Amino acid sequence: MSHVLLPTSEIKNVALIKYPHKFVNTSIKDLINKFLQRGSRLQDLKAILIGGATIFDNEFNYIGKQNIEIARKILNSLGINIFYEEVGGRKGRTVVYDVNNNIISIKTNNGTIIKVIN
Image (cartoon, rainbow, N blue to C red; front, side, top):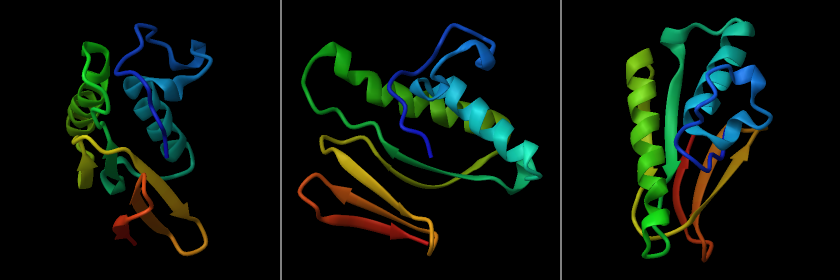
């Protein structure tokens, strides 16, 4: 799981970036490399995209939309299936991953459960 802040880093070498999970492009590369190093096969990987909301009305806050667009582009170029998306809109979300039961819960900021994925 990665919580990114910005679409891209101009630094090409992920190892040189102190916090690669701040950026969509370096975060996806880093996560995939870690999966592959542990024996996963690229064709077996699946992705879930959550977030990218526009909370405030100003130019800076369209970054969420850019984050989602870049993530889709990178995952598509790698042949990784995006099997669920809860993106965009004007509501913030909280993601809870239950590692014991392999369940992802997506909640709105007021605590309403939007979706449970297992």
